Image (tube, rainbow, N blue to C red; front, side, top):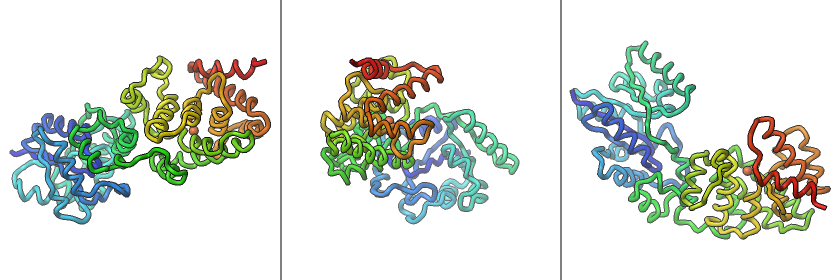
Length: 392
Ligand code: FE
Ligand code: FE
């Protein structure tokens, strides 16, 4: 019996994770043919505004699949409208009447599969294949669903995805930061750049304040926007109080967490792509790296001045001999209006009365928290504290 695989998606953009998973799945399931089918309009995923056209996504999938034995199909694009998988499956069933059809998907899709349009019809035609890569909780959810399907006479295949995945959302951030090369086929990356897709053609240096705010908000996680704007506003207030440059304070406030959405491995990738050497502490705590990577992005991508860059650089750990803008960003980040913890009001009052005292309070809170969690305190924080506390 012919064995046919179906791997749909928005492919926005198609990355090496998609192709490697498809190639792996085709071999592991011993498929005769595996169709990559970019959707026209996905019923599952809203495509962000400014995304490539469906034709550009098809072109990228075609480039990504070059040199593999995967088959790219434009059937959902040429059908137009919303891309319902059951319609695609019926078309393929017509083309391969006696075949066993395997529908490949990630965890999220598998868990919601029975609520898809015409799910019963769809599941009567295909064997679902789920690629998982997540933690134990995810595996348990999948197993529960697999058993649920089995109780209805539907068999499904659960496969561990050996490929390091990256989400398309993260990939789009990495494209703007100019370090997406490890995740994309060369030709796909060239196509993206040639066509200025995903904001790659844009010059981000010296953006006017309003534009900068828009770009920053599009690159951070939605739940971080309030913090960033709060930090910006607080930094400007503190700059007024302490006679620092208000524009620099606003720009550093906006940009300080620009790479915060990247997880540990992506932080390391960014450092690698920018040729930055890392110390042992940073490797152990890649979360603190967002200050370093944020500073690099502020400099290289946004063309910010030295004062802004160094204020971003020291915003998580502090350092010895901080200048006024560096102190302002450190403190503003700690006590902007969205921060809630015991003692935050005292810190807010100190920030406008004695910024060095506020620095010491912030550093001491960080140190005691790290101690409680049994974590290492960075050399920079220790030096900052000594410098501020024992300075004559
Ligand atoms: Fe931060
Ligand atoms: Fe922050």
